[in-house]
View (tube, rainbow, N blue to C red):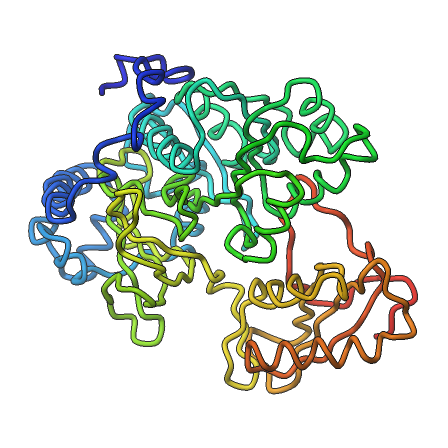
Length: 470
């Protein structure tokens, strides 16, 4: 569908016809050999586009001694150097606002977005009209996989401010697929969101996992009823670890009386291009006609196949992208492949995100992701409050000492039992994740509650906490 056939700010013309479909787009269930053929046709076109329009990749390919014309298959991509986040930041700094890697005319830019900037300065991303259509299309596939349908009403609980992709693009993509988005956002606060939920009874709630839990816990205080009575049937989560952690998912589902599915993306490529279906057995790659995805063994930096149980970093090459196209972009997302077949019929591999390589700590030789620690602590509710922070008070990401972990005790657990709780948590962490922890217990509700900003699980210095031993 060309951009002239619909108004990109609102609804796709045939959105209502898809309500009872098995998936949003037939490409989601296309055999992989046909997908690969389609990808390679678009890859050749993308290389020709970059050869003509991208000074950034012209220099990068020339420095590597590689011709654009030599890249014709998915396997050929392995001849190319990676594109790193640091290069994108340098490009943006060298040629603001959209960087040296801008490959479209400024007059054709219709929108810009920004990353949340949690790992450094935000990335500012330009979109042409065709780029925006791709974003809407991939988002719609992710939303549809989660059980969201044209005609639904969705309460928007991602941040709407700061140019963050969880804001306007999510709202636009909901409208594109025929969903009525309630655009309050996490910035509007729990009170406005929950009162809107009580007034409008949306079928869908979309937000970060920790914030959706917090909203549910506040419902009795703010609107006088349990969140499970507000009519939400689908909780769509993303933007931070949590949705793929069983204990957190189960808590969200119990509090809201709804099914919880997660999505995954990244601003430099798009908003969401991994979407979890109703089987809830991992997130499918739903944008294989727009993105070529490689799985990289972080130890060898070699490409490995998407097979059950494989783990690695996701590497992306955009195909069809105009404004800020990227080739072999190191995403930093470390995933586990949960499967390559699904009862839903989608052919994209299924993954869960273990964490970001930026966040991974190496404690006496053991690789530790803060999200994995969070999973263990959440599993220990009600002994704990399910809330923790890692204190990485050392240079870099490696330590030979015990890793300090600050944990909120359960609301009904007395403080005089903290010594036993500390020992229990340390044992659970060692048995589950094979590292030695030094756990500090603090009061329930010590840390600031989730809001418009992503929850940062790792701290670099001890926070100013009342009556907490250091």
